[in-house]
Length: 328
Length: 261
Image 1 (cartoon, chains in turn orange, purple):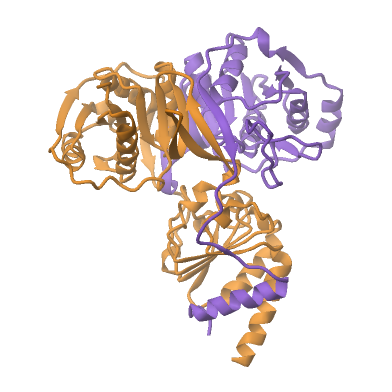
Image 2: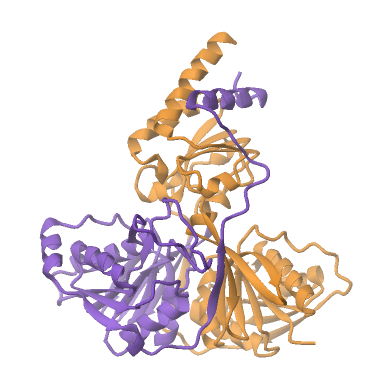
């Protein structure tokens, strides 16, 4: 049997991030195809307890590297620590969650190991005995099938693409802790600051009307405000793109670096549907997408899609609403 | 101080995209609109701000670099019109998909021993969405690197303070020795429009062409096998009819689901 598939766990302050178990699910599926085991690596200041938790929950062997220098994420020190753990079993597949930590670390490892690097993997497929990794390109409008041209490959797994690992393991797994220190690096992580984005809890809204760059002009926001008024307990949300343009404040940003919401109704107006946005709202009960681009990837998650220019569609909708409420 | 900004030319992803016959990348038609990757615009603006804020200091020079076929020169011209001093074009004769590692090794091969203090790039390219080129350049040149940068400040001649934006908007604060590579997150600034004087200057200015074949080409890494259109969503319903009919249909649905009364 060949070297196990490696998963690099993500932890923050000794707490295992749930995306870790999604990466384990991915690795287990890959392991089934290749007849290989999964082995988990965890790095941090004090990770003995989380290492045992992962071992018990997944039935795998976990290698923990502990050092004071691993307290906060630093790409250079984490790279050295991950390499130290990986050299103990020399895996050809290394999986990380596709997070700000994962996509920072993955190419550093790939570079040191002369491996390929494929990020934000959403699916895998076997073709003629070769494993291919599928990911979104062009804001989700197209899918790319990728393959490594090297023996080794580092993969980052898109959050939400695989369910968390929940198979009850046959064995209790095992954990091995290595304490070590690392050479000083050319960068020093000092602290983590809380978000500077003002607090506006969109979680209480039952209906969220969200604006993207596709509303084209900030003056069109008043249309969205009027639309919001027809629903009780509604709020305005925004994609990162519209916040970056200064059209709405970052306190309304929904997505990876903003808020995660799951209202009863989510109306995405002029939002293309980049994965970073979708991950913050796809738990909504009903999703309506309004976009003039029929290929926009928002339509792949929308329950109801409307291909229209919202500058004319929303006024028509509001007019029809007035008729509707007058007659009912 | 010498700055290098990596700018990529990408097809406008809001336009309709067609996959080429071989399925190896998108088909470029005459009407395909290309523009500068938005994330790189933020990186470019950040370089210009560093120069603006340190104008009292020594001379700060900014070069922009791009890899690709001849059409890429338009994006370099735009960078020059926004205010960079020099445009460097690593010329690839074929119009094809290039993996992040291929692109990074060409840029790193050019930048090596050129004495750049800071190399900036967008956190990702809008077309292939890999988030890799900056980190690869840093690894090849053995420079420290910070990704997803939402704030930066040069502390002195040999250090820079940065904040990286991570999930839920939290920030990791770190200091890097120079030379360093930063990948810039969108929203860090508001990219400027080209000024008339810079547009005129850029018009006459020559772009420095570099033959990609003459740079060190490394072994292939990740490969694109094929592109495909996403499978149509099974659960979604695209409303049809006239605009008014769609509005009526949507209101009926909202009423049935008790969102409006």
